[in-house]
Image (tube, rainbow, N blue to C red):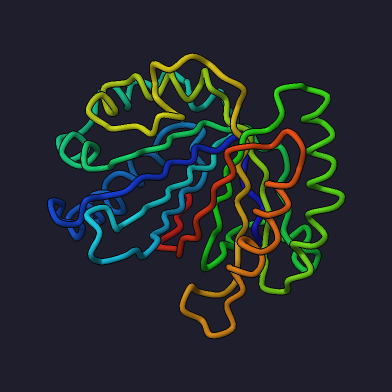
Length: 258
């Protein structure tokens, strides 16, 4: 349970203005048209969608996260995928611009593991919720190697001390692959976050942690805040050379495989 399939992953997050967007129609398109279309592209192996409830008084209260697990990073710049991005369906053209402050990251998987009780059991396990933790690593490659070792040797055991943590994944954003998709026709009317602007200068790749939990956001025994807000984020903030730490917890909408 919990291992990511393949060697690459596309992580997309963004907000929707619930006052101007019909979210029922948006989610119908996303789950019943867009996910099957993407999973029909060679190399796309698994897709999962998440939602984070927000302040209902906010104009951008609905936050969404989608992850596409792919065979390799090359899948995200393949001829077949780029052809799909540059020939969006009518409903894709209708709903993509409703996603505001989008962050779209084509990533390599640096590390992916389920907790020891599920070691070696591949195939279908997905946590009820996921925490997305983003941060900028040090610019020096040797410092990045030390950071990765610290995450796996020191931070990860603490994370897995929480029995409701099912899996942990460490990802690295590839700026060139991300930009290739961001500049396609599907995204030409999408508003990107400044950090993932498709025409911004190429920078050191952002790192992402994806932490899967067994419990829902509303469970009385939920520990999301404890592990993310009180352990992972503070330790990253304190690590020398790490900057731009941010996090959000999402609950699962659906998970489907090719």
